[in-house]
Image (cartoon, rainbow, N blue to C red; front, side):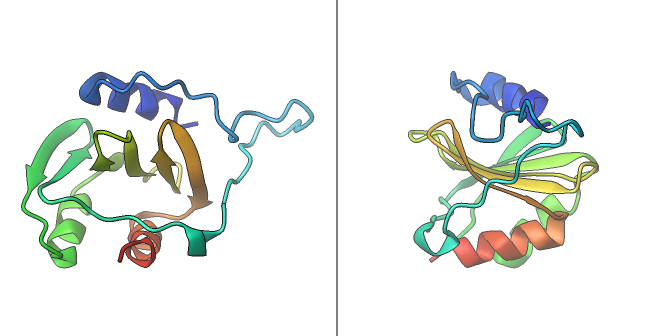
Length: 132
């Protein structure tokens, strides 16, 4: 479902990781829906970098985060299709939300660690819980 977003992010960030993850299609799943991956949230902690790079509907920019969650919310709320927050270029870590599909994901080292249903508000609430 997010393969095209992953490919877009790969082109923009130099990411060479594939999209073969735990979210691959289940051959026995006749509905074709993706499996939900949700690994122990309490073990997942992230830091939003400063400056923060964000891709909104394919356009990329950065801003001086410094804990300004309101500014981050304001920026991602401009998205019509999707948004991606780069969490670390060195570890290929990012958090993304596809608005039309109503799903958000957390990726690290080319592996999807979390995938869940929800729009921007749910995604940001989840993201805040992961930060420290």
